Image: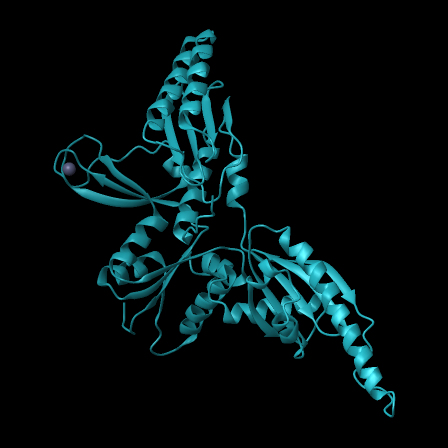
Length: 417
Ligand code: ZN
């Protein structure tokens, strides 16, 4: 059982799937959610479903009965593809969603989550039961934070972009300099003992706090003097946690304010912090925007599409806040093709127009429906560029969404587009 590292795109795609599922409503209790943990045997799950199948024969309404039994059958069929559950288990969402006017449409999602499912769960309701998988998805990147010197120690946690203060302690360690004279050596010895006891104490407190946080990715240690390095070198933290120390950072403060300073300092050095990645790439882009000559920045869908087609995009920046579908239409009569963007509300109940190329009165056919983020990401990836999905959680991310329409890029070289 292990956490699977998902790429930003996989996370985005899963988040969008969950949004889609949340909108599904059954006309009756006929939407099935099934959570299978990795420890469950497939045959046990099948047996469970078979018994649900026979019980559902008692459902009075004929349509509901038909919808429930066909959903169960569909899951049973899909289960046959598994010899055993995947590493983190598997979740099924199957049923007939209402599409208005007494009409229903079959939906079937099979999701392998990024973190293990812990409980077996079957539910048949008028909506899908999404809480357990949503809880998994909202797991943020978690880092332990520790600031220390010989006088103070602050312990905190970084969850996504949020910083929590968990413990603040002060020591009784005397200053380094005594009165001199004969007692000087004894004084120094007493000071070193007091310092050692202080490190043991804060090491234990920090270890208790950090060990309880199972999904912590690493620990950042900060402080103003050489003490923090000594603390790390002498391994005052639990041995399992010693391995998680990412690095030691210089900060001016060792109190609550220092936590923010520590995260900001670490973010500059750690490319794998999502918040850091977002901020860095957006700063790079905004710097280009400011240039009056030779700017590499492009923004707006039209300009970005053109640059993508030319294969000159080095880095594509897309806001996770975009909720747009790219729909590809084709005329069944003359084969004329057309692409258009539709937002979520327009997508619901969308009826394709007639062909503008020939005089056929037949409506065009939806050949493909893609999330705009996926469509543009595929384009840049085939041309060897990189893609950054930017949340709206930081100021820079919000400006990508509101000031640049959520679509921007940095070119390989400067050219007029
Ligand atoms: Zn046509």
